[in-house]
Image (cartoon, rainbow, N blue to C red; front, side, top):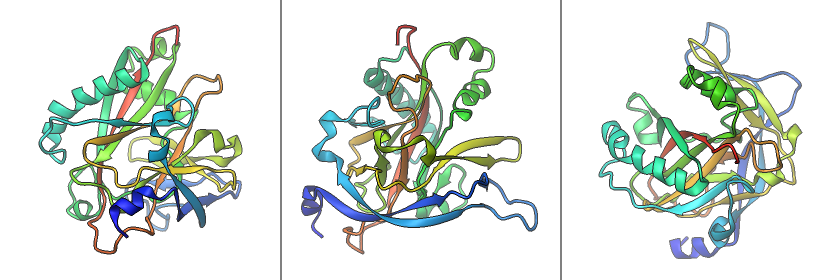
Length: 279
């Protein structure tokens, strides 16, 4: 399908992969598990959903309402696949971008990940394939723990004020034509949809939310996101006042993408975002 035509579509029908609730906490190993232990437990199911074109709404999207926002942004980094350049040039840009978008008085960038199926096969550290399961990166437990892990000397004082975890997601170098990022409107997620899942590392156990299917879920995406555009995605918010706390997301196969398009390559920067006391 022609790219311009795809942008005009109000919605597409796509497949999202959800966790089936069983009452047992799923476990996902981030390294080779012991013999006889599966890399990932849990039962998943595919569901057909409508995914709406967020470009028709981008001016009205809010990190505190839907849980994500769109921002035009031209980076001065020449090569976002170069870790040294990302840290030297792109990190300071992202810090300024997130402060401006949120009103935060402090932004701490703690890592980044490149998503690229072609590069993932090279064995290079920090390269992963897009995740095609509906999830949120942090839980009510693991959000505060991330602050304690990264800023142990300041954590208890910082945790007395509002903070959030916000990712900045963008194409690595070219327009994303397939496997875009699906964004689940936080207002359509019920508490019981979120299922805590253990992430087991060699030296620690983290926790994320897998997501169970709910017909009320409202999905959006930005078709053909360009290299001069970015999406801010909230993964956690400590404030319990009705604003978005745990929006979910997933990569998905775009059924309207031509078969010859290159695989999606993207970069996401993860940030801890701290707000003034009055926020």
